[in-house]
Image 1 (cartoon, rainbow, N blue to C red):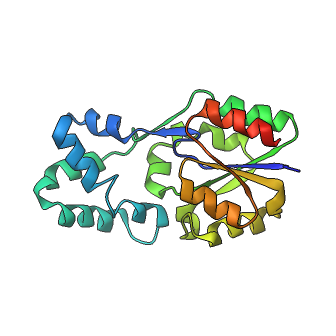
Image 2 (image 1 turned 30 degrees about the vertical axis):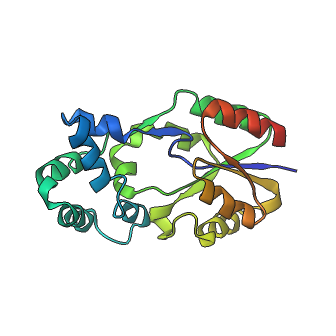
Length: 198
């Protein structure tokens, strides 16, 4: 029986709206695409989530990787407060589950700086029973250790949990530990699939 609902954050409870963030600084079209490939969609960005290197070091890695976009990268990285946007229905979704007796947790690959600078977009956190952001434990999905850390920290049984994430490999990693999983494509779809398990 499911007792605990574990949420990823990005593209589940909030929009990782990097396209809008880049556009905010005046970059469009091919230039915006190149910036995204150098930053959010490139191999260096996940290091922000692990919390093992300083933001300054990671910025210099972005620049070294794509030096022809140094000015643009530094500008886009100068303020990350608009890179995420909370979905309108997230708090209501969590509160409706809690009202029915379910516990809610978060498990997210998330960087400390984005949490700090875009904290206003994380109002749902105060409505949840707890959770883990990757930077706090220096582990990231789909590493099984981060799932086990969450289970251990809150005394959860895998078979009593369901995990919602927008990335297939992250859901598969949870399922390998005995946690039910839902691949999220939208909140509406996720709510419907979740109801079939509860």
